[in-house]
Amino acid sequence: MFLRKEFAALAVLLVAAGGGYLARDFVPSSSAAGTAPPAKVTEAVERVPASKVEMQLSFSPLVKQAAPAVVNVYATRKVVTQNRSPFFNDPFFEQFFGRGGFGAPRERVERSLGSGVIVDHTGVIVTNHHVIDGATEVKVALADRTEFEADVVLDDERTDLAILKVRDLKGDLPHLEFANSDDTEVGDLVLAIGNPFGVGQTVTSGIVSAVARTQVGASDYSYFVQTDAAINPGNSGGALVNMQGKLVGINSSIYTRSGGSNGIGFAIPANMVRLVAEAAISGNKVERAWFGGSLQMVSADIANGLGLDRPQGVLVTEVFDDSPAKAAGLEIGDLILKVNGKDVDSPDAFGYRFATTPIGSTVNLDISRHGKASTLKIRAEAAPEKPPRDQRYIEGYSPFDGATVLNLSPAVAQELGVDSGLKGVVVSDIRNGTTAERLGLKMGDIIRKVNGQAVRNTRDLQTLSKQDFRLWRLEIQRDGQLIKTTIS
Image 1 (cartoon, rainbow, N blue to C red):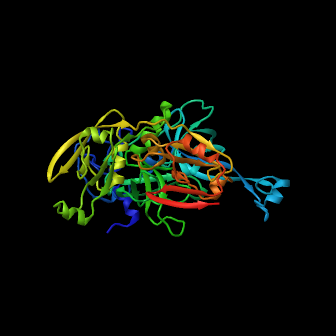
Image 2 (image 1 turned 90 degrees about the vertical axis):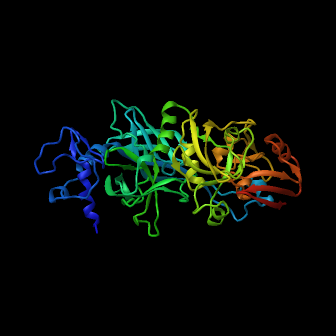
C-alpha cells in the first residue's frame, strides 16, 4: 500500500525530455541514473516505480514551470451598515429623522485573500467569483512579489468564476495552458498551487479522486474534478495542474467540518474555465448552449420500468416549444445516455456537457426510445431573449420597493438559474435596506399575481406597485413552489 510520500515515486511520469515533461503514459527508453534525456519516447506504458532512482524523482521541475503563473488575489470591499434605532419605522420619529430611523450609517472595510491563475500572457487572470464578490479594489501579487492593480472584466456567479485583467502591464506574464479536462482520469497525479491561510504560495500533491462529481452545490453548474491534494482556505482560485504542467481546473471549494483540508477538494474543470476566459478575452458575455427541455435522474425504480439492468442516463420530462431539443426531435420519455460520446448520469452532468459545447456546433446525443438505441443531432444555440427583458426598478410604498425585475425569457432564465420553460416576471436583484429585502423577497422569485391580478410583464408589476392597496395579497413562485402571502 502506498504512503502519501510515495506518490512522488510516480514522478517517473514526469521525466524531463528535451526541456518539457512526459505525460503519465510515457516512460523513457532507459531510466538508469545519469542517463541523458531520451530523444524520443520508445515505450508507452503505465507502471509503478521500478527502482530506487525512480523513487527519488521530484516534482520540482514541474513546480518551477507552473508556479509563476499562480498569483495571490487581494480583494477590498466597503460595507455600509446602518445603526437601527429602536424607533425604526415609527411614523412619529420618521417626521423628524426621515424614513429608516436616525441611526447614522457606518462604513467599514473588509478584505479577503484568494488565489488566481494567469491564463494569457497579456495579464488575464482567472479566480473564483466568491473571492472578489462585491470588491471595490482588487490587487494581484506574483510569485516574485510584484504587485499590480487589476480590473474585474467578467464576473460569472453561476460558475463561481471571475476574470481579472492586470492594469499598466509592461511585457508579458507567465501563463498556464488549458488542459482538456475531459481527458482527466481518476488516479491521475495532480498538483494544487495557491496561497492557503495567507502563508504564501504553497504546492501540494495528490491524485484525481473523481472526475464528474455533482451535487456539490458550489455553483449552478455542479460538475467538479475532485482531488485529495490538500486544499485550504486561500487556495480558492488557485491552479490544479497535471503532469504536463497544464491547467486541469480552478480550485473552488473543500469539504470540511474543521475549516481545514480533509482530503476532499473540488476544482472547476478547465473546459468550463476556458469558456468563461475566452468570452472575457474576446470582450463578449458568456454564452452557453441552450437545451430547451427538462431532465430527471434515473432512479432504480425508473430503470426497472424502462427495462434497464441498472440506472443510467437522464430522462427527458419536458420539451419546450421553439427549442433546439424540439428541433432535434427529442420526445418526453427519451433516455439520453451520452453527449458527444461522454456518459451522463445526472441532469447536472448533462448540463455541464451541453453548456461547454461551442455555440454553433452540432452535438450528438445517444438516446434510447422505447428500448431502441439511436443518435440525434442537436444544434448548440444561445438562449433567445424573447420577450425582451424590459428591466425595471420598482420603488414606492409597495412590497416590491427596491426590487429590479425582468421579463422572463430563456436567456434571462439561464442567467438567473431558473427553469427556462417558465414565463412571467422574475426578480433579478434586491437593493439592501429596502422594503423588498426586509420582506424576504429573493433573486429568482417569479411574481405571479398581485391582489388576484396576473402579472404578465414588468410594466404590469410597476403599474400595480403604484396603487394604494391596504392589503397586498401576493402569489410568488420560488424553487418550483407557489407561495401565497398577505402583507398589510
